[in-house]
Length: 501
Image 1 (cartoon, rainbow, N blue to C red):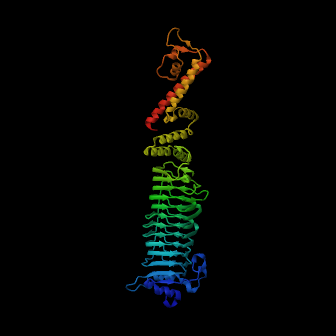
Image 2: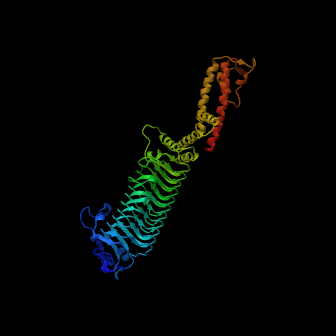
Image 3: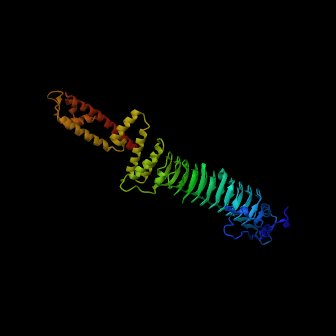
């Protein structure tokens, strides 16, 4: 049991100020000597030292507030020795420690408390799993070094502030916050984390803001937020990650932005498998070296740039209602440059899958660009051709050359005109033999050529005349075969066009 007479002078100051919530400032005022994050706290003497058990005793009711006063712990520039262990406690006062150095981890596991502020402090770890904080948890500018910041299944009714903080854990995770429930936002602007941020299944009603943050976990995920639910996720304004960013199954009701982000590790990937978002801003500063996985993602608006499109991609199952590019095709690349870039975007995905082509074609139809939609579907058939066996690939080349898989039916007319001209010139320079003397129509080189090319019906020329010379005879057989190929291709092309496939 603590006795007042056993307290040091700084501890008595804190004891006396607590019932009325007054600030106790133990800073020296000497420039450069009051920052606990730079190691100066090791040299702070007894005049700035407070035992953790004194702070715990006050928070647990050792010196209650008089009527009309509001107790609070407000301490600045102190060296706190011993373990501040408040696990399971019900704390009615706010806690505010500024520019303090805590020599042992803070224990808040399972406690119920009001707002906690540890701003500009140095602390070797914070264990606040299953705590309930009615207010804010503010670690602005604080360094948590050695052990991790643990917020497993913690409920915070206000905001979690990690802006300009440094989290450095000996284990793989600097922030361990699976199941975290936030009624406010999480602010990690310009946060430095040496170790990953683990937010599996977190519910972040106010969003997660990591603008300018630097996350380093080269052995694993820099950010792991599978199945998390949040309104907004901002990884912008110089955000960088050494390690993967994984958001499998995350549900983001508003905006997911990577504008200007850098995933710098050679194996760092952006895993957005099954993500649902109202808007995905995939405009990083450089293409993620480990690729971008968008399989089965669902977004209303997808916005990207050259870096986002040129990464190694997985697009199977990706669905979007609107598609935008933040950059424009270079001048002089032609009217079809945009759709060509989109087709190249799909081709970067390994293997062949029809869905990305169908999705893109559907979007072009939706905005009234039917010609672009046909280009996409033609590219789909050409990509698919590479997966077929040799005979089918050969027929695919013929089908492509003749009618463009049904999306270029005018090509059949071009071939018909070219073959008709060639046949007319050859047959006009030779003399055929009549099948029956004195019978049949007079010979016409053009009509004879068309009769060979068109397998249905007849103009009476093919049966009335034949050739004895090998050259015209071989050309006749070739024109008959070409006619059947053209007819079959046209029929298949018309069928495909009618089916819009």
